[in-house]
Length: 253
Image 1 (cartoon, rainbow, N blue to C red):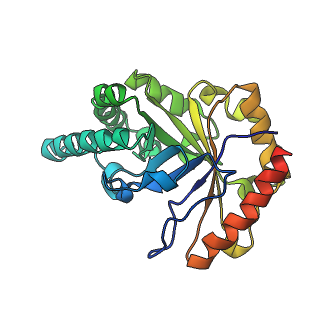
Image 2: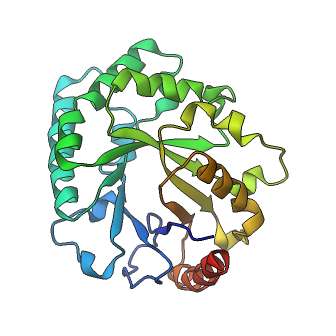
């Protein structure tokens, strides 16, 4: 198969330097803290994504009663979206802690309204804002993706969708009906992220990922498939780049 593969450097160890990436990667995800007009994008793949424009501790609690904090958030995010657009970025991921909204109507309304206020900036910059959905689901989802779609429908912005955070090693050995699992997400999923821990011996293999490639083809998801290694040591990234290059070249062949 020929895939649209990418790598996340979100968990790149402190002090690591962004290096040239293997040609097999057409996309790269960077932490929002690196979003700057001075970012050297010439040595990166053409498709650049940013994850976490602002600290997650802020974005998960931004729907609180403090109007000044929310206004500052909107202004800061608008400026960051402008910068992202100038760098050629068309996708950002922001974690608003959707699961905390499922049983709290007031919180759901406030969070959806806040995201909705970003619509004009997203459309003007031609940027998609993606909301993360963990698979396996968090308990608040009660085993279904329907609550995520219900929340998204409150926003009514075509530039807001979902990023699936797949933990393939947690799903290994389970009998999964991906059609049922993803039924409510199939029209709004715009990014697939495979999260794993190479330093604990986790390896990505075709058997783990193939069902997701197949369901993506069935649903006609024309989106990147990102590998997201969790790392604490600088040498891990160097080793993973070699291993992942060979892995994805094998898949393509």
